[in-house]
Amino acid sequence: MLLLYRSSGGVEKLEEILAPTTDEARISARLKVESTSRLIDIIHQSKAKIAEIFEGYPVEVHVTGTSVLYANMVVTLVRGQVASLLLAFFVICISMMFVTRSIKLGLIAMLPNVLPVLINLGLMGWVGISLNVATNDDSVR
Image 1 (cartoon, rainbow, N blue to C red):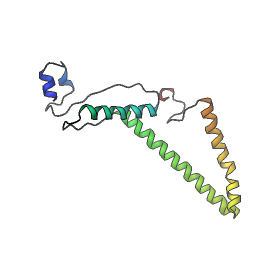
Image 2: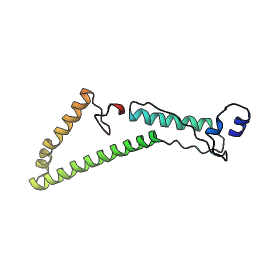
Image 3: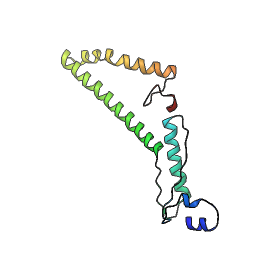
Image 4: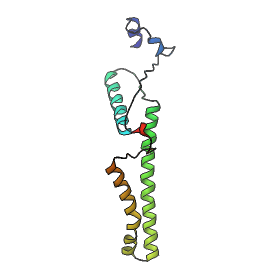
């Protein structure tokens, strides 16, 4: 398909995106994205559009680059932080139940451990501070 496009004179610099064997091509795009969730949406939309364009052709397409790497890193980081936070609360809760020798007192003892985290996250959301890899990095918002 790319050879037909090249021979029709459609693009002058098609050789810049084609491999020497003309069996591979690279198309690049620069993105200015304000949030990771928007970046993930753009990646999914790109994959869907590419699949639509090349439907019926024996073409294998991969969306790659630093944007995809960054999005995957943030998703993995958030999942890991949520999992470690839940594990920490669970371990502290079990420890409190063991120390107080009571399920009821152990759960009550969790309040001073959970409330500061909930207040902090709630205050950050109310003020408009986004949580990301570097909370103070304005370029990621």
